[in-house]
Image (tube, rainbow, N blue to C red):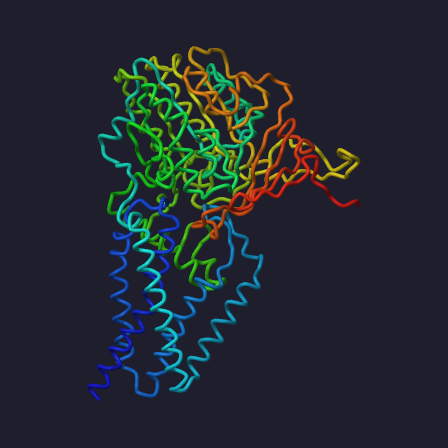
Length: 602
């Protein structure tokens, strides 16, 4: 009997390990490699934190297995084996699409059929395990072991292929020395370039015209020109960054990583400024460090996602985030809702207080305040400070007092405007500190966004009616237009007067040419200086829309990229028309450029 108990314990430990490694090793490693820039610490540190729960659950499985009688034990092993197979199926075969998990709400009332499919598979498989005889149990166990061996082989291969991602984290080191350099401005010449991620231009326009603080914004942003018609090139950050820096557009013509190396490592506004003698300071989120560190820089700092926690807490935070993502992938549809936890995430919210769940917004606001409070003017060389912050980007977590709202709020115009206003206040206070220190007037300051904020813009025109060639046209999708409305406001050296608005048809691809012209760099970029585009001049601009979801996280190419051509105001849907479609590996599906967006007759 004693030998039987020991054998049951060993078998329980073996199959328990097979099950647990799906949860704590195989899926986490896959997700980490596909999202390496989203994490602050190496994967080895995260997996080290998983050892305790693994040991705990193995002990539970072993104890439970040792206590079962010889009749129930085979079924117990079958249940462990089937569960591990179900986790593999759910995490690799029944992977439903939920969009980017970047703070957006998920409508769980849609596609409930997914839940019934998942539930049917799980109940059916577990029922088979419970009702199976010895022969069926052995087949189930062998199947689980075979799948485990295949996964283990894949993980070993992936570990060799991604050794650098596993062993290192971004080249940026968050030391006090680096942070002190970020605080230091030049006594000669400064360029302050702020990317306020997701700041929609028409929301900025609404904020500065509000009765409450409008006059203050107009006066505080002395010398600025707001380009209200500025048009974005992509609806998301990761392909907009190379466009901002280099003016180059990704069209699925080469693998993404090769394009990023070529575009960001080549002729960019940062690299040319560095070559011209500017000391280039980068302060960017950890999730974007992989891209920005391809450029040349003097100092680089990762703006933490949670500035009020310790380094050890970072490990816990990253481990909790990776575990939540793993659970979200492994569990059936109806349980995913509870893991996502209305954007607060299950494990992360259990291990953190409410203020911690303010996520990037409050941390990045804290960075702006810290920068403002610690500015010094003691560098002799000219300085180019490039700062990318998640301010008006979702999730929306701020109330009207710019404090934590107590929950993640829906991404609607009212909540976006509140968070955007809170962000703008902190930026303007930084500008006023520069004025106090005497480095504002001579500075070149760029306040811009990479894309809009997912909320329909005010002033969108072009109702359904008769378009070119007598075709019946429909209003352009408001969300697509919204994502093509990134903020752009620029102050040139010694410019003065209240903030003014330009209706010139500018584009994000004009950014490097505009800055190079303003600070007199000996470098030519595609596009034009926004200041050289006369208001009312006809100009075709292009926006490229694409889907970016889990299936693209590790892919070499994006899903088909749809080009839109805008001839006129970006706010006039009648000015939008379809362009080409760019498929992976450089395949172009050409459409007539006079093609319009059509809707059926009533």
